[in-house]
Image (cartoon, rainbow, N blue to C red; front, side, top):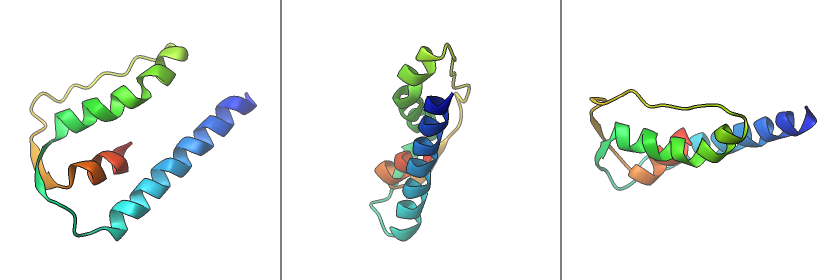
Amino acid sequence: SLHSILSSVERLEKVTQNYLQFARLGSGVLAEVSLSEILTRVISTYAPDAEAYRVEIEVHAPEAGTVAADRDLLEGALG
């Protein structure tokens, strides 16, 4: 439907803007960040929309590890 298309376009625009912001801000506050934690937080953002469409999202990354990154920028880039 048109609503679904517009929603997808808005989501893609947000993702693109997040990537651009992430690329521009190369010098953030770096810390050890759990990838599993970040993925879980990003997915929880989309959970209400997914549930509305009866889509189940699961994270299967118990040992995804950590990276040195700016937590907020990484989360923004993924979400």
